[in-house]
Length: 95
Image (cartoon, rainbow, N blue to C red):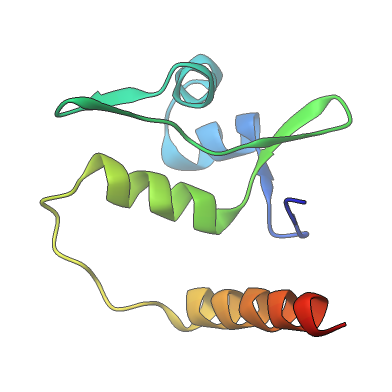
């Protein structure tokens, strides 16, 4: 099951924040972007009538689209989200 939290953004909200159109972001989800010889898609999940994207999914999409880009240090907020997700996964596995 894919987990999504309150930090997720709808496609129109993400588009507005990054300065793209809603259709551009929707195309990233639906058809993806060709990088080299592979397709890279933006992960999204439908919640009710809206499509939502978690911040980590958008960060991963950017990394996959720009493989030559140097890796930046993880932000404190991203590290906190990653650790919380790992703790939740371990807790679910252990019961």
